Length: 79
Image (tube, rainbow, N blue to C red):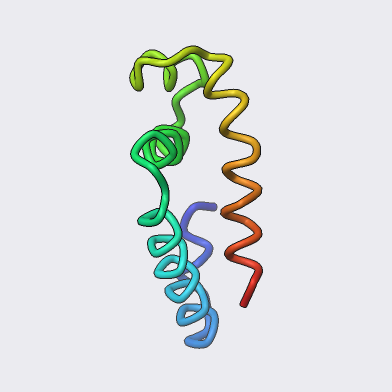
């Protein structure tokens, strides 16, 4: 469930908080459009909705989103 993390051990909680902090650092380095894609994806918008919100095409969002999230995953996995 969405509250499974409530049963985390203290070490798991610290690890989760470290990951969230690292993710915030990574997102801060992105361009405004990339940040918009990340934020709107996190809100659950479709690619078409993201494109409309950012004033770009579905195709642009589709082409940017995959490599963008791959970059974020790679940065998170560096440490």
